[in-house]
Amino acid sequence: MIQIASFVFSPFAENTFVLYDETREAVIIDPGCYNSVERKTLQDFIQENNLQVVKLLNTHCHLDHVFGNEFVKQTFAVQSYAHASEDFNLGILEASARMFGIARVESTRTDVYLQENEIIEFGNSALKVLFTPGHSPGHVVFYNEKQGFCINGDVLFRTSIGRTDLPGGNYQTLIHSIRNVMFALPDDTTIFTGHGEPTTIAFEKKHNPFL
Image 1 (cartoon, rainbow, N blue to C red):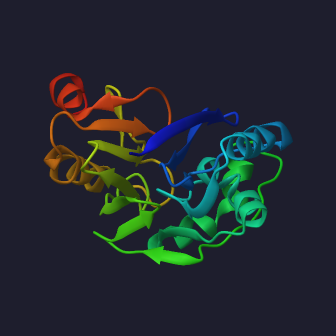
Image 2: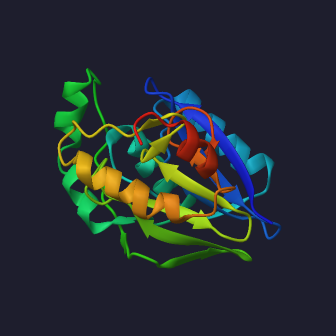
């Protein structure tokens, strides 16, 4: 059974996730750890729980979701996985940092490109890659049907949706992704968002004013 640990990191209050199962193998999703204190928090959790990190997964590559990419890759000797279209965002990290008043951001690159409907395995567990562009060109989410949850990045939030005014964003594409991919999931699916609290598909269908 997959355990899900979450951490709120950086001035953007970004949710970083560590998923692991009884084998102690783990994946880190969207490491947003911004400074040495946050990086130590993440590393201490891994060590204290005797976890073996085997993959770094990115839902997308906006700077707040990749602040810790190089730290994770180097500390745990793992490769990073993201959709190829997210190379666009990796190419403008420095410009994005300046736009948000961030002093510096460490450059990073994707090691392995994710494919739509690909199955990502770790330990005895698996996540399915669903392609959900709109907030960013190559945004994906990670879905586990068995336990009924989805690590959704910045596609859907509790009573809100991801912004589309950043470079590469597209409102109509985002709405299409939500209606045709996210809302195709079972109503009781728990959605773990990139910022803020979790929600469910049923709740958003009923209460989200943007949909």
